Image (cartoon, rainbow, N blue to C red; front, top):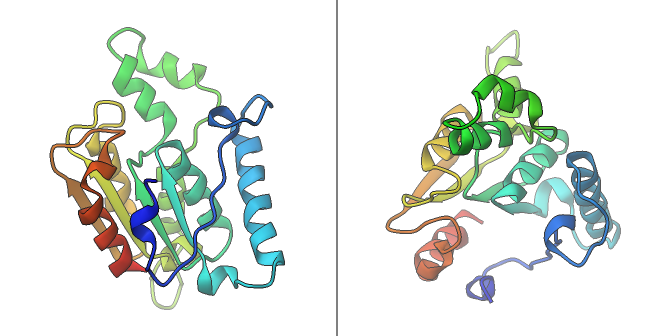
Length: 199
């Protein structure tokens, strides 16, 4: 239902569930989730209806934003739409539990990092020697981000940090006023109007 307002846009929608939040029984891991996402996009491409670099926008929510960023760093896509994104899981953990466990120890304990900021910064650091402009897929991947200013799970400052580091200049950050982590779609008209304009 949350995707219903997208009907009528010049797009079709395919969705994939993460192992940890769907009926998939396997124990989730960062590498396994990325492999599932790659297989899903490969399957869509094999159907022959879509060209990945020309036709596919990746949409990610919360943990799914890191999966989308990782995929976009490895293959060309038309754009990214991210809801409640973060810099890395370790940063989220430090902000949530840093008062209980020292930050350096937390960073050692977190196995799966989902480091979106690192990928963005890596793309920023790779430049064309002639033009000094960033190169790599993320440097050419338009970005639309949404974040609730009342998000107490992924603080908006983490989303803003990722946004500021994004190497592609075609980007926009939408603050969803009065919303938290799981209720962005309560303002569906506002959100999906922005998505329609982006795609």
